[in-house]
Length: 151
Image 1 (cartoon, helix red, strand yellow):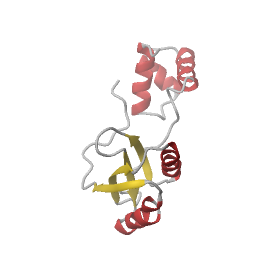
Image 2 (cartoon, one colour):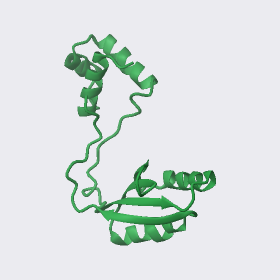
Image 3 (cartoon, helix red, strand yellow):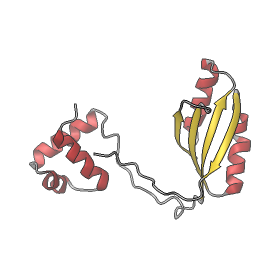
Image 4 (cartoon, helix red, strand yellow):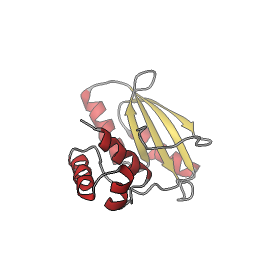
């Protein structure tokens, strides 16, 4: 169970994942040893899954982002498993959600440009067996993009 101290630690680490243990302890009002133990416990429990740099997509050369709506022809385990296995391996796919509604899956994809997106569709998406349709929404502008949970 997540306690108040844990949520304060998590909220601060989401803002500054590079904070030293001393800085984190000072920020959340704990001793350094207690803070270190809490962080380790959160890591071991899988609450903290890792640490990473947040990279600006466009400045890193990925000018295009799209949301794909994917529907499968059949929901046999064979088709679902193959779709999921293939999608997981593709670096262009940043997120994949199984959803309710018209589409079975929603994917967030980033690529360098429209030509790269066309190749992604032609050489990857359209070759996965069992797909009924793929509909794309090209992202014109990111209004909000956050990975921080609302502690």
